[in-house]
Length: 110
Image 1: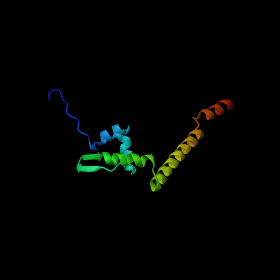
Image 2 (image 1 turned 135 degrees about the vertical axis):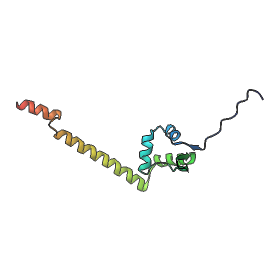
Image 3 (image 1 turned 45 degrees about the vertical axis):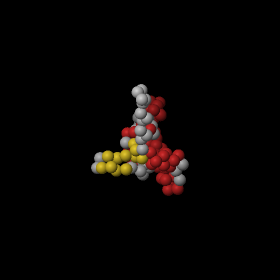
Image 4 (image 1 turned 180 degrees about the horizontal axis):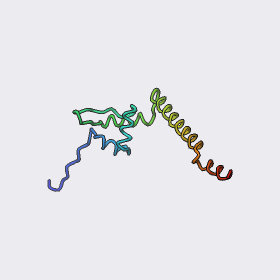
């Protein structure tokens, strides 16, 4: 049986890096999601060894696709908080003497 290649083993668990790569995200985003309670369930295989099963990856994807209940409320509240923070920053910027409109007004008054 020369020339026959062995079949690659199917992976059942992923490292955090592999999970991030498969789901097109950075590790920073992964950690933020985990901190906010939106990360996948992790398996702790030792003090510094974390793995994510492919089943949990599937469940995580399903939950991210159609969040419901308390999670949907958390997402809506976080979105509203971000919008309000941006609105406040815009108002603060517009009130600044360095804002373009305020510089024009100052130049016209001279």
